[in-house]
Length: 582
Image (cartoon, rainbow, N blue to C red; front, side, top):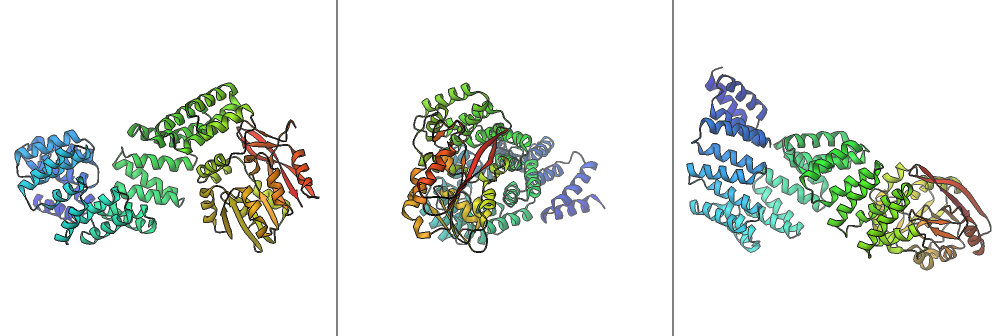
């Protein structure tokens, strides 16, 4: 086939979006004509369409060396430099294009975008006005200037004047999203998509808004459409990887994350979300590398330092983990998940180096005297029997809810099943005190058992609700519930698995539970020095004699206790007891 026919065939493939076939022919032509600037430019455009901007830049530079006076080559180079996050170089290339073609309105428009991204609003408007000087009917800079000025009325007016143009509802959508008016933003994005179907920018925005507004199934379809339109779209690949991760399809997720990172190696979301996936698969060394890549890109992001700390904690590097957690804490001191991680890691360090852990904890309390976790932990380290802290328990489990079951699986926690083995099937209502995410319910669910869960943590109750096994879930303090509502249910059994270790004194609660049957666990206080004691772990330990005495004082005549290992902590068994009482 001759050169012209081959070239026309490649252009045809290119126009049809068959990029790989077009690229193969362009490369074939380049072998016989290595100094053809048009072919180099076309190869650059294919790389640009695939999102491979560093590769595209190389092709455009080669084309410009061969044809420095061709304005489109400079424009294409500038566009890839802009997308490769090199604003200064992109601006220079747009200026080079404008020197060759002063009427290139698109160059001014794109320069306006760069200045807008740099928060140089006045300079951005100057560029948009330059584009409008060349073409007063150019709609794109009109919409962008209204967006910069946050002028919703102007965008709405322009949308009415140009009802067939997608640009105005698109920028209205962006502006509404910026103002957290996500329903309005979604409606505008849908309208824009109807007017310009198949636009990558619109599909990306539509997918984001559907996720924000809870339309996950439709969002997945949108990103699948986007991936068909452009198999090299990082937005499609990353979001489809996220969906795959959420359904435990880790092989598909990993494939998409890696493809996205091949296209855009510096993509923060790809590194961070891929790292999260690896962490949840317990692939800690790989997750560590991905988080490290993410922190280089965005050192200001607290969640990256926090997650790096989680890995170091899991690897037993407690001091390094604490350094990362405190780095995150300094950036976002009100993020309670960070405080939870600091407290947990200090507890683990306490096993290794009591003096160092107590010194760090005291320093934390000095710097953050109102932090409930710092106060509780310092009391625990000192052995102070502080009052039961309802706020502490609520905040702890609200922040623990999403990962609670994964963590318990790692430490050998099996108390709900052991309770069920000891009590057998329950016919009637079972009131699950401190139900958490619903593990006791999972152990007891059966025909004839009516499950009622009570917990102080709303987020834990959300997880329990997702299991669909509880007849009723109640957000309340346990003592308040038992004193005011328990008798309405006339339960056949009351359970409390790994709950009383967060309460301390149990006199009022046990009194409020009588005369109903009980099955619960406690963490063992071995030395008998007190009825209950706050341990350095931050959990309460109970004297079995105190529990037995308390049950008998409240009329329970059949009291049994069974030793068990509650969990593993730092390689050591945490000893406990199960009590049953009737």
